[in-house]
Length: 296
Image (cartoon, rainbow, N blue to C red; front, side):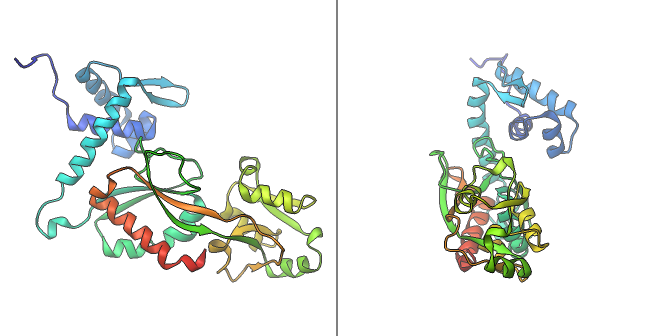
């Protein structure tokens, strides 16, 4: 006999659940869905009543999943992927790739390489929407904070699918006048590096070891700001070739060694290729980095 007290799961409630998991706050989920936070709260309460258990707990950092919520996330993710596949019809016109793809990337990769080339992807798939989060922070693909991620270093999470896209080479770069002066006396030059948040990054470590007496005249938390400072003549910066190598306002400063290369990986969830919009963006990224590997 059917249980008359059991509430059927409402797909809309599940959609609100995934948004709260992704953003970690009622306000963030509400903004992403175009509703107010009270609507998100009401939808989550209805979902929790339906499953008969609390799915979230309030933490100082935001909303975190309970054990039951973790179980729900796996089922909800499967529902979302199934809904995405079902939304694609069988006719040629209906198979046009549409929908939103959330891509996470480090700021320099995002701003200096991916974004300037997005026009080609948009022209090929005008119904595709891209949400790009440029951040060094590691987002969680399993929690649907992003669909795809471009990350430096081999992935430690064995549950994700990873593909190496490139090996990023580095060198010392500066404005022409600064570079010319440094050729004669590099020990007396000013240098550019990371602030405290990036002291553990390979480039910052290399600079401290290769030039322990170097004066760090400018610090910033990202390579885009460091490159801008180098262009302005503030000092010499260890920068990736893709960012500085083709910049006419920067020149390579000769030095016997360079920061170690870093691997760039494309990460995705298992079975993401079954969703057309994710497969298309993954294939575009792989083709893009393969075609322009000379820049790295």
